[in-house]
Image (tube, rainbow, N blue to C red):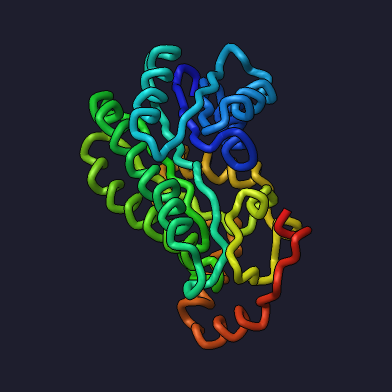
Length: 266
């Protein structure tokens, strides 16, 4: 990765910051982007590699800011080789009660923001005849989870778009990879929008994998040009159960539902 440049959106904490650190460890230069400049600059400082990093404020729902992010990366490092779409947040509520304004904002960030990033960076990668776009989806995009319907829908949409774009960009030497993590030990609950129905399937960040584990999966997806990578590996068992034994799977899901209190949301 020496001489290569990686852009990571949603890099001020959690998975995004871990991905940035992983690519730095492999020798790349990294541009960390987030809506909050102070937080993403703090993340950049934590990487301990000031000469190979750049922090940029970018709201992926604003195309002009995405274009400015790309321009800043090229101005500082001269090129872009990998673009990681990690920016996003969650919405926890029932389909019946979810606020539609919050739902639209969710899609604007998790789906349309990622698409616009792909549209902005693809011409550069195609001209280079090399490079990769890595989209962070979720196992929620492969398995329907009650009270996470809108979030899962965004991740399923991102996964579908990723796989189609992979075929479209392949003739130009550009790879598209999609990574689908399960539960991760991050502040997902804090950054999520909570609706009136505060129910969630039991299982939380205490029982999840680490952000560093996801970052390692992202690195492996890039290094091996994986079409889709589910992490952890036993997630395939859950997906298999969902597809082969839907009645049993749904029964287990309903049994695992519990109401979240204010402490757990924080």
